[in-house]
Image (cartoon, rainbow, N blue to C red):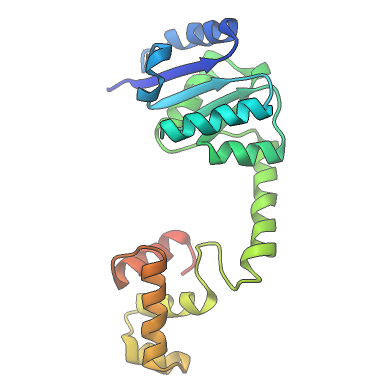
Length: 207
């Protein structure tokens, strides 16, 4: 099995050395030297708190590397967490509970497209998404998949095998309106064709 390449970053040399000691015991991980951090599959970033300078460093590194980040931190606020997520952070581990086992699981989850968050932070993220839905998406008539109610209606009938004329008749639209709806969806979301649009809606869970 190919090893997961990992770069450990911390402004505190002792913290970095301790984390490297934890990770050296895990054969599935390949540790990179500090100067090769941009080659990592997963980055582990340790800091005491997400101060402005820490967040600025996360933003800079996210611009140079697309690798997901496992963040080790003493505490993080909802606002800081949302900023961290924008900087490719997919897992957050409190410093007080870090162990080789926990860190290894978080790295593996990050490498396979998953994430790890403490339950309290998951709750905060869910609340934020609900606020976004209520305050931004719903007033604009847009659902969580970036689709309006009218677009969802058209895509649902397309998924049932109806053609443009049948969809127009079912929804009491003109054929031109149906075509415009489909064109708007495919171009706004960079979808290749009608089948791709239906697949997108299915994956988004809106039809």
